[in-house]
Amino acid sequence: MKKRAVLFFATAFLSGFALSEPVPDGVRAAISNLSLQSWSLKEGSLRLVMDKPLVSPTFYSTAVHLICGEQWQSPGAFQRMRLERIEVLNHLNAQGFALLDASNKCRELGKATGSSGETMIQAAAVRCEAGVCRKRD
Image 1 (cartoon, rainbow, N blue to C red):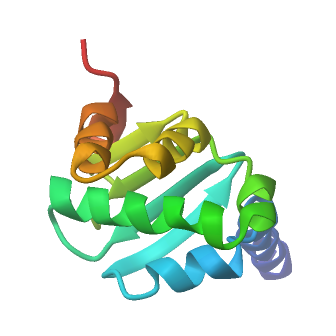
Image 2: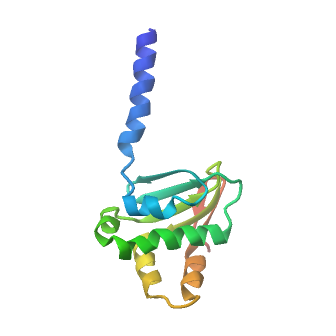
Image 3: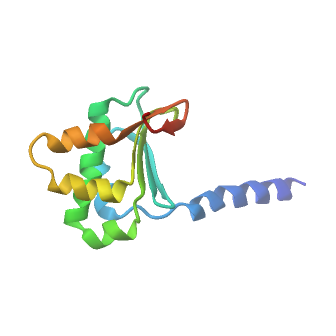
């Protein structure tokens, strides 16, 4: 009985890693100085979980800028991520912001000048509350 329980939990634990895709080295390096508990890439969704109770719009924008910047530094690795969504969430995965259609938004950000990039990121932000990210009405 104990062997089955250990085998079950080991399989469940390892299968979680199998579902996660590798985050490219450039993106990992870009976000390494942020206060993060974890990050994961699954099916085109990059989720960053910070070690703080509140994700500010400024922190969210900084994370998006760093991640999107990798499309110019390492275009091949960035394209292989097939990035559809960037989520920046608090330590409980309950509050934060998401960027939908992330690859296209990152491309737009690359064409932005001055403060228009910041404005674009904030306008595209989807607020996440109670673990659910909803588009603005």
